[in-house]
Length: 632
Image 1 (cartoon, rainbow, N blue to C red):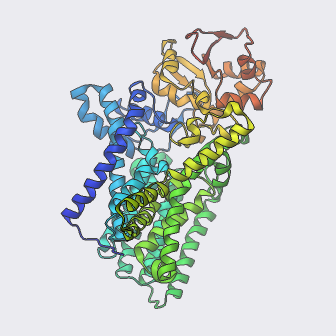
Image 2: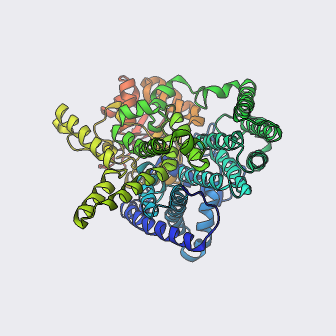
């Protein structure tokens, strides 16, 4: 089980060639699906729409430190907490192309190239990590296949997918590879630290791989591995220094004392500093046995967490703890990836199987290795396997709180799952008959494919739906692919027993939304899931709502209006100075709100009732969007 760190140009050339082969097939398949939508202005998810709005504002002159989205609830505009790292990468692609092909085409090119290039880097990283596990001749091909066919990973690199999840996966893999290869080259741990700092800047969704890196590095010292003291010191100083520099250069001075729990802030700077102090103390501690070392680093690490919690107790409950109960019930409870794994698996069994299959294959491989050579000898005392196992297990544990961490777990699990497939293919060499061996290899490739178990689950779910209601026998994309409109900010239709997600997104398409561009400029009360697409597709409207917890005031205002009585809705809309009310005739969010408020304004509007203060605006007979002019 090699763990090499030397650079070999021929080895890199083979790795890159395999990655390029797999990547080309993957990108062509995704372009076939997404290119027509991108050309029409449609993006994979809400976060992608909001990201392109942020990028355009920055290109148009918005200041580096100004992350305010002035068109989202103008009475109290959103102060976004997103990092500009994605913006920098996007503009690095689009800016040189703009003078050559124009701004619109340059933007389209960047929408395609940015996730595609990140995808290529991701595949190369998975292959390189897998090659540290084994010298099996199949490992390059199988690791490339695993990363390409693992749906929770591959969908984050779809054309147009410019939110931060793909970048987080790449940073996590770079951090893991640098940590694994730092055994021979200790200074590579600086790369791990920088990736952790960048991940913290991007968002707290990076917590699984940051926590994993800290634990894995700490254990190198516990077991007194080569240069472990140096690596502890380098990581401590680089992680804290990187986080501090990013905090000071990306947050306005007026916010330096604001203890945000959802973004890089004094909360996490204090935690980084305490972790750094703990690592520095350990690196100088003259302890000889692993038990004493483990006791010291565990105690200091626990103290770092405890002190941070005592200073900032509000963050213990997470960034959504103070969210208004109405929003938590109507919106957050129906966001798919904000759910815990058990709840998500119950509501979305096929998507849940897609998330879980790669980690499951990885754990099977670990069990086989442990059975053959012993748990202690084969995993705990082998640095690169131990580190990868830590990354997987911590991400899996966090998924019971928020399922989105399974995306990171799957990325780390791909190399081990690929090792399992490579070992099975190697075992097939024992079969002498060429035909039988070919059939056996095909069975291995299909049986251990990340798509096999989700496909079986899909058939089972389909059968149960058919037995319960024959009219529902045709499965929608929601049941076979986690790509479409299942972002961390979109409504989870399954929990509301909506038969077809395709029906739930009819209002979020370019033809429907671009018709709103003919309206005079104004401020619209809008549903939560339509806000970001409207901002991205038309320039003339501001909206009240978008699926972000920092926009609590705007989202609550929309709920008050849509779910309140006609009289109270009128008073609230006029008080906000709203010009329009926009709704969708029939989608997931509409169904949720009308179920919660059967006598509310939105229910009455969908039933065709008229009100003297709402003047219907015709934007096309076939348009599923309802638009009203608000008059006092």
